[in-house]
Length: 268
Length: 305
Image (cartoon, rainbow over all chains, first blue to last red; front, top):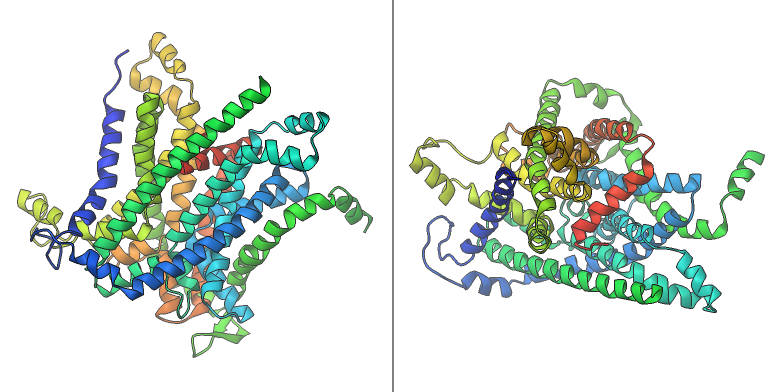
């Protein structure tokens, strides 16, 4: 059957559309001209300035601290939530599920302003802690849903079988259940980590003195119009993103396969 | 009381201990703050940018101010156009991806996912650079005569829409791909064998086959674009405000929290309409719906079951 060229061309068009602006930024980061635009020769000076910038280093540190703690919290709370949702079918869980869904669809600005008003009402000072609390709130659901996805594919009779064969409940959980859901928890955590690193809107509403994160730094640089270092910073972030996505893609694939062979061995 | 006891008896301690942390967290940091929005919309503002002590209807009544309907209308049409464009582009892309050779498909998916993972502000900055008045793209367009010498690319509704599409396209491609991947393409061949033309088979067999993906994709694009704030702020002009940046303006420039809350309440109601619509469409298909979202997420993260 002859296939239409149209869908393939749309994909190519999409990819050009996706990468064209990113390419312009990367090229600009090596351009020795103050305002972008015309090419004035190759330079690495922006990267040099970037490495010596204390403000950026501080912002990066804040961003990573917040992302680390909120990811950790989300992995614990989200995994527990997924277990509750999977193992129990009660009215409480119906309510629980609706509650887990809601942040997935709530526009960020609503979460930002509502938390701002909330922290104002309870008299909390805005800063790292309030940002952390906000980040957990919008990342939690992603971890819960990702782990839930793994649990749905897990056959719980395997645990019963292990118990019948003499394994303790802890051993059965550790040796059979954990390897299966671990990729789900890791994937959920990775998603939460990225969402936290990336977040601007909620962070912007909840940040106070001394809690500048990288996205907020980028935002205020664009606002101020002092974008000389931004190209270089963006290029570095792009490379890091590429590497993380590719590494996570392949390790996830490996985790998946090793676990499939384990399953095959167990059933064989 | 006995009814309450009966309900509580159905819930065991283990379930409660697993449920309470996430349930409690979301009640305190999600539900309660959302309710506060509605409460503060009825409070007076004090002179210092805080919230006054008394109640008033004035803020709500001022929503009829001739400025707001324009902003609400712009927010809706930009979001709806964004959704339509994203769907129109993503459906053929999802179709193509699902039929691709497995090896190539992995790489293509990777390329689609990377922009989704890239820092949002970096992407906005990239577009600002690309569309810049002194940028290469505008020089090129002026040189070819497509663009007049005094026509800007930035700071209008067009640039907002362009970057909205750029930002939300992956959100549409991923659920549609998740749906297309499960579609049985033999059905298309069968339709062709029975005499349907290619486009006819595409629209009457493939599209209904991925209808659930279409619903998920529409929601995932429409709802966040209704709340857009950074894109109109960075790429829009003076007269292309959307609800989101009007809200931020009330918080940071005019320091009037009750008015910001009133507009946020309007945004909540605007967002609820498509969400309730989706619930109506997906009525009584809860578990499959859940599966849909978990599948989409697994594509986001690149982990395949």
